[in-house]
Length: 236
Image 1 (tube, rainbow, N blue to C red):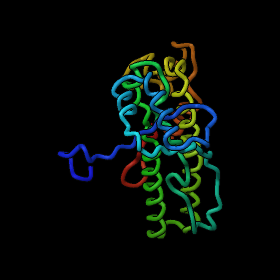
Image 2: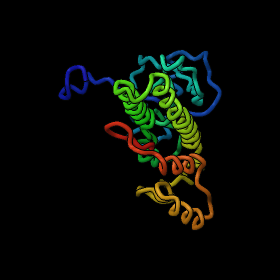
Image 3: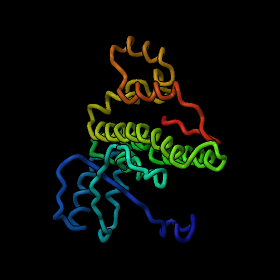
Image 4: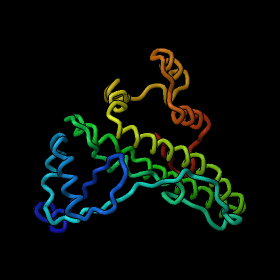
């Protein structure tokens, strides 16, 4: 908002549309915008108007989504480490997703696609790293041991969340899978079977389906994790 909230004509917006398919690297701005507006015609409001009203001279950039699963790294005796996207890049399709669904429900679903795990895990990284550095200053640990302990925690946590992010992104590009998601089966209510292993077992038996691998891993982690530093950010 360059000129403040009272001058909406000066506001700048970022819009993103994502879909599965082979990228066409030969399209120019005008051709990309035409393709986006064509796809937007089948979306629900206000998403449809948000895209179809884009000015004709707007630059439309293309961003291929890439990621990698977190792998252990050499911290050179505690002299370096990684945090945030450098340690666990979350595909942005979770937050920048306005896909090609032929249903008004897209408008209701879109805000729910942003799990916020990229930021949450970055905060968690900083909290854990701060705790590690504090132990060094307090002479409770050496630099090598403290940073190695941090690395040993962040690698499996980050890797698991990247896999979940990718799984979620593919799911949200498959309308049939969206219809089978917990939001459509159960509505917007607290999750069951995630924070309590027994509840998860009961839900599994009741529904006749298993929890995802990610949920099972996360449940086991939450059973043994303890708060680190001043605060702890849960993965869900």
